[in-house]
Image (cartoon, rainbow, N blue to C red; front, side, top):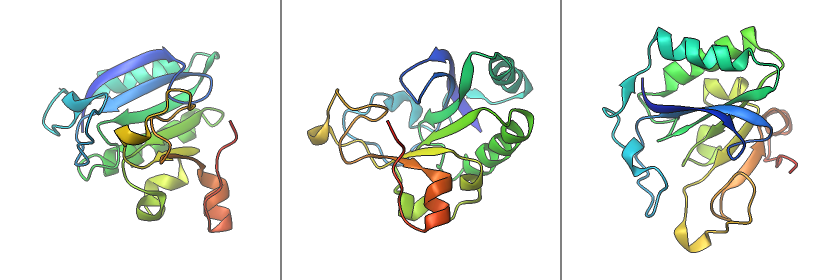
Length: 163
């Protein structure tokens, strides 16, 4: 897996203070995307042990609520196995931290992915510039959903995350 950045003390990509991993690779290529540099799956840096240690050092901080996977798209085919393994390890080492994941895919397309058993909140759907709303929490356009993954998996239908 490749990544472009690790953001620390982020307040825009999930609730609380978070660390954000911006992965490389996205097939959605949404017009006016905020991160088109992340579309190339061969761009950025190799996600190595030093990058993982940087994430874990942030997650060890009591004031950090959790991690957000964004990009690019964490559900891009070449990212999925690495994101799943990383999410599993984070849940084991930091059970009180939340995991958020942003994807251009829809819940209905990704809900059966094994990584979803580790994700607390999923923000789904492509960014649509004609539905841009800067007043929205945690999403860029009104078509996107902020989904409570455990509740949605348990109920079999989409349950939105409380704002």
